[in-house]
Length: 92
Image 1 (cartoon, rainbow, N blue to C red):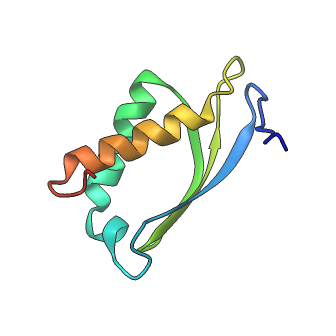
Image 2: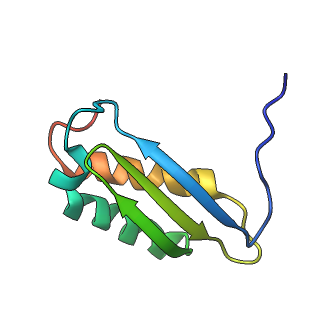
């Protein structure tokens, strides 16, 4: 079976990100680091964050990419890498 990933430039994508510790408060306790991660990535890879919901252990976001761009996966990876690097002890 081959996994099919959406590849539509300029589309709006919905994501859910779950923290490994589903009982913790990782995202809300470190919300400033998460904001910085988004801000940094959006400077180098523009997108519109149409909506975001950050709860203690998971985050959901609705994001629209530029007309010529469909690379939502790299943005998500870079946001979370930036988040974990801003807070000591979060990197695996």
